[in-house]
Image (cartoon, rainbow, N blue to C red):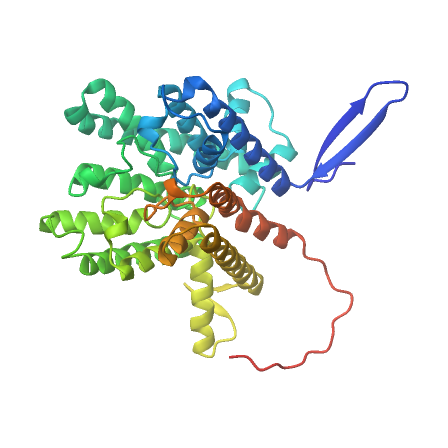
Length: 460
């Protein structure tokens, strides 16, 4: 009988004898294979002549890089999105962003629901893995909420942005720009159509664009389970789960501290030409987008080194679990910070909001931190060998790829072929690696039949 934890792929070879080969994959492995398949399909579509502007080079590695960046909702690009790709190419990129942000299995659920088909246990397990949910109970209902909330939110903000940009670009272009950037922002992708790698620098002091884009980024990056928990809290007057409280608290602290630091560090630097309100809006925008979205209204290469390093920290932490963002996640960072604080105060348990965090969660958070640090360190070391760029720029690029952010200090278009492959791998691992490995660790626990004697070691 097939295990709940695996999915069987049966291949029958016809001939004189029939042989069956059965390959079992876990939900985490199926998720990785599915994302890789979507990336390859996207790369093939972007290699077609209809996807590339006339006179532009058709290169599979460029298409693969762009497809990986879109599916992994990163936003790093080696060619200018607006001028290199045709409208068909832009539609492909937008579709890849939507599938990558929600997860291919969540989008498959949408098709299942449209066709009225039953969603089996194997599909539910993969959806659970895709949404980073701790329980299988109500997972299809959660997927429905995710789809409904996503489409309603994207359409609502697309309408506002379309009206705003129609004033500058005309109705036809304004409508398309509104839709594209609403989907890209909600999925924390960071792709833009303004050309010349400018991102949203022309709207640094624009309140409508700033507030719409940042709200989309926060809603997409806070985690779908948190949003559902908040809705239930309002409807049923029940208390928020510890996960939601921690995700909201860490997100709020990071945004507030990030805004303040960027405001004071860049007051007379990159924000020197802005009015007082514009400075506040630009600081807030960069603090929000630095955690996983990849848009920028300030020139990243012109920022103070201290500001650039602050953004690296924000990118490394990233968004919340079960969201469209990357990084080690806000709750991972919060769990470790709380554990250290409780240890300093002499407490045996990690406690917050009158609740205790299990030691297995602390260990898992520590494992994610170490794996992420190792990945960023190794890739940064390799890029330092293959690329002729400043170390800070390379570290910035690597962290941006791992956190699926998309911000860059300008070295992305100049990456060597080997450098592009390293960034592609980093984006893919950043989107799936820590998440899937953490769940694999949680399910791979085996009860020990033998416990060795405990012995003290000196640390610190």
